[in-house]
Image (cartoon, rainbow, N blue to C red; front, side, top):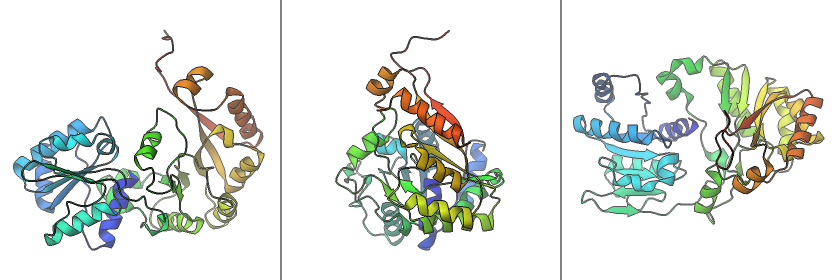
Length: 329
């Protein structure tokens, strides 16, 4: 949950305090006690669809025992903003909250108005809802502080013990796969900035070193949707510097049509031990007409051949139970 960790880092950089509570295994009494002990002015929830019902009920229960301002962000509020009509939901953040969430927190702290904050919908005390448009996308990702992993590891210490840590070197994806959120999000943010934005090699390497100095780190996972989609020269610089300055095994995600001999050699030079490659469906008609994958099976087979030839292991990602396919018994 890099979003939670990034928002925490932004808040702490601006002299606010933040604490993460993982609630699922807590009794109601224990949860209320933790909230009262920390005494927050804001309780924020980062939620995906499927978690929303639980989080809304949890928020309503907490409001019965404690006074605070609630903020909901993440994928579910972004694509289902009408959830703000639910009882106890004071505000929602749509899309990137790195700048807008801080504006709301700053304003609440000093008692200033904040109902015009981009990316936010607000429910006023009279029940009316203010709906602000999405603001500009963050262009320079190097300006964002490194994720605050301490807030996550304090809440769930077992995560710190994992030898593999996840990083992201970019935001956005240019592809139009229908099972993914990106194509819809790109429509929502059209005209607000570049679809794909990238951290510099220096910035991502500095973060990896920062983590390596503080926590167990034996393997790096750069979880960009499409690792091979980078500005000209980025992969070459990263390959040269990662091997020299980090020298750990690396995992990443690829698309088959971007796999060629040059890129395979770059991955090998980086020290990639295996990649994730989406296949999703072997029926080309469904893959391309329904899923909008825009990739042929022969291309995927060629990508697999190149990976094997370069001794790079790979896992395939596959969707199960797709509409239009006969059931398998």
